Image (cartoon, rainbow, N blue to C red; front, side):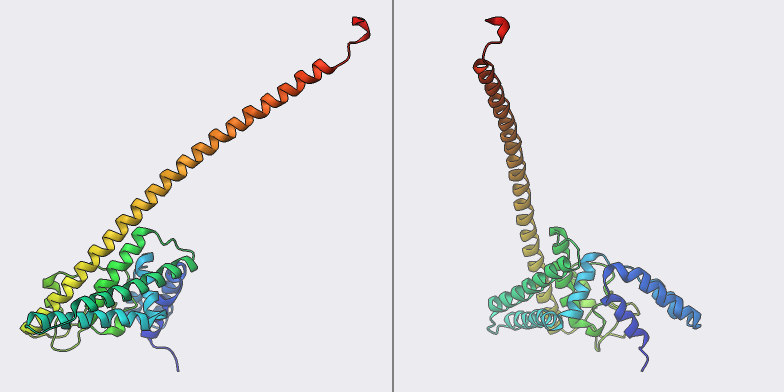
Length: 269
């Protein structure tokens, strides 16, 4: 059975980042030659994702279970916040820890994936991956989850108004992570759903603050390491110079000793 266009687009976003542009252009060209002009234009318009968004796509395709654990943790946390807002007891702290653990696990996988593919896991890249994962886990609760894995850019944490707008009567496909959005009618959000969305926003904002804190700590540690490395390099240069000076002194002393030990020549007798 021949692959569908969706299958081929999915394959684009699963491929190594360095191959994306060539593979996209080849697919668009093939579609155009087949007379599928509109589809060819849509494929041609797909942007090459930055390395951070590419890494999130790979997490979805290659580590689906771990990816799903984060979404599940955010969903359970949102429900707990809604229950708590309604006066019911809820283990919010435990669920926050579960969400944090799921995110940390995905970030470790992303770090290993980036290094394995020859990309640098810079602090800023990891921060953008963390923020995108948090945003995507929230958006995925209101959209067709089959459309994740095709990110062409990093995502920002959703604001409350955006979350409320994402609450439909049925799954909608107009989330920014899908290349061919299909608008779906929506109804007014119920108070319970709005409360749950607000809770998810609070969780996403807290995760962002934690990610920014980790980034600042990592940045400070890197700067301290650079300063220490510079000091060590300066000390090494100074030690090398002292060694050269000592070697010259030893050589001069040897020459002086040889001069003193040399027997007088016949002319001096």
